[in-house]
Image: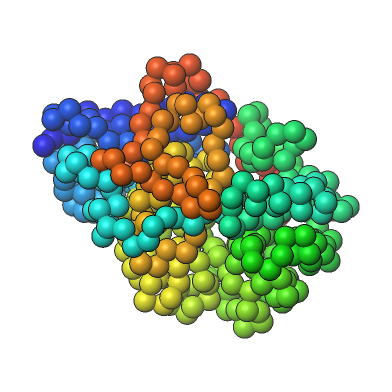
Length: 402
Ligand code: GCO
Ligand code: MG
């Protein structure tokens, strides 16, 4: 089999997506997601200008060799743009191979290790009452694990809170919006939020929380300690992770489990975190971490240290990545949990897919390949529109981590 062509499909059915379609001489094609929220065209250009010309004529079954060719062959390694581009190719090749062998992708990754993929939903509210209500709504929908976020009193537009009447979606068309932050107010507030959620929803629900890189290590240690009575499934991204050593301090002070890595693009971003057992869950996912080929190695390394996966799955990760993550999560030994932030109905229409949700778990489907396609005609009706993630400032105007 040979790769005969490859093209990018850019579309914005409610939000932007960059999708790579690789076509072979046997009429089988594969899809890969290349969406890097707020920097989409950088990856698109990397693929169109630098990667696609090198793919034509290659055997799509040589997945490992093509991965090494794109990674080592570029000379310039790592980084989200490069690794998202490599991921798109890699996932499309796994899709092609599984379709050619007429089997669901999970069978190429070791086969089923469990019946379904445990997922967590997003519950958000402007205040505690709204957040509790939102958690309850997700429990009623069947979720067994829910991430709870709430507006912080005295901090206008804090992280994770939707605009009135709309589902939460961080990227906005136009130039970046600005949000405000106060770690002091947040640290005083967070235990009250989780006390209220536990009071309303009981002890059995898995509760998660995203700190979104906003605290210093010592502040994060304080947060983890203060949340221990509510036994969270995890606290996510408690501090930025460029300095992996920062997690040592958090770990020494709290038994609240820690997840990090949604902005990682390489195994090496997580190497110290894993081998020192400073984290419990790795969030680096297929689209930004170099594809299935890369994540399989990272997950196997993590397994040795009893670190499990907890892949990023917000709406900026397209249904193609969601499908890939579900096959992956079904197959690997050290799967932990998968984020599930449902796409809009329009996005789902553009990307028809086999995966389903039922009673807290998701299932990738048992058809050949990834089980997701793109309706190119429909996609063409929603052209790419520039959009950005917000930036954040402290109450005195200082720029801080969003
Ligand atoms: C999450 C995330 C997202 C990110 C977004 C950035 O845990 O779901 O933190 O909401 O902010 O995916 O592109
Ligand atoms: Mg997050």
